[in-house]
Image (cartoon, rainbow, N blue to C red; front, side, top):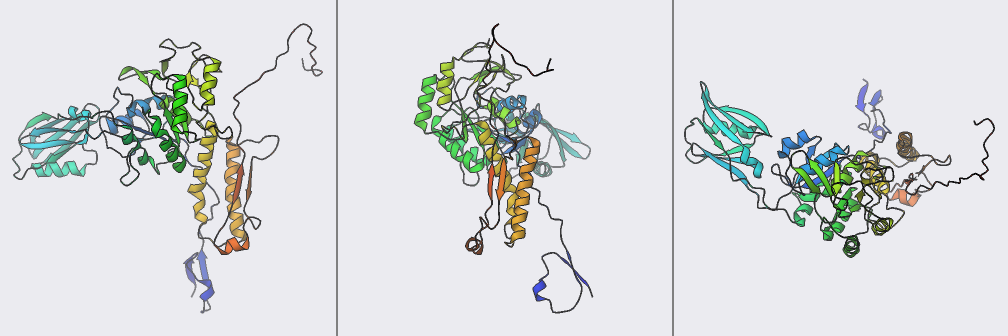
Length: 494
């Protein structure tokens, strides 16, 4: 009698009975998908929402549904999301931080305490209305931004159970030992507070479970991240270590109004010299917010937003930024040459970048250098950080399937095919490019770099070389003009 097995479940070396054995093999895939390079992590303050938990956001509507709107603070996560959206970013992980003095809004209705599920001042706008119906009571919980929610029950216990069963509920009920009868009424919660501006330590957070602050972004697929409004130079090396461990490009900034030489001195003293951190000079920019009016904000969200919107091989250099109405150095008028060549040289040589107007391409606001904070010219471009992290993340996400396979020439071939196919797809997308007719990548995985002693110990090695495309930073056009110039052209060219 014939037998059917899934491939790998039949021990073909131990068969004793003559028969037909059919093994069903799953289609083999040698395709490696690229990791996301558009994820932007934002750690900041808010007036509502979970604390220390990364929340996916794609639009301002998503943000309002989770965090109840923006606040007029330099550390506000909603302002950062709005700015980055304007630059083309659309994939966020938002982590709310507080200083620990935040409180949840509360109210008393019929002798029963009702409390907002999250801390923050937004809870003070929650209105609860209890009305009697033929079959019991209806409870309406409403908020001008978070929306209205309807519940029903014959007593407080049933209403409490309905609220607990709703994952989007805005309030919870604290039932007393003696539960009173329901009666029609209404209450507006009060006493909710955001607390003060959190210290740097709150933005950094803790790496132990449950993670908080910056460390809550671990494993969230972020390619770029900001601790919005944090200007403490002492934490930049900590951000660099996190960025290196997670493959995240951290965007930091100095305090508002800092002087050029002061910024250079502080950067050197901090010990920051890493391709994992892009440090923006503390010339903050003016942003016209639709909820808070004119605001002076850090340049972090502008730089982070444009980087998250760009393909990983590209630089932030000379890309138009949207929503900037001025800067501290240029004033609200803007549009003037606020930085001399000497100023920019000092900043760029020290590993700081800046947003200013004009840009090389015209009279618009743009990131002026496109470098990270590293002093190594081989790795100090935005494109190096972004593309290196993208390649590493893609390989880490897809090549693990080969662990546990039998080591032989077939395995070597499959590994090479997967890696070469992935790199070839990057070439077709323009993420990699051919220069002088030479392929920009090579893969070695065979007996030449996998010796028998290493194979016997369970090691397999694949050596991958990838040549990145350069960024045109210093464009030189040689012009020779005059009546005495002898111009030679090809025949028939005019």
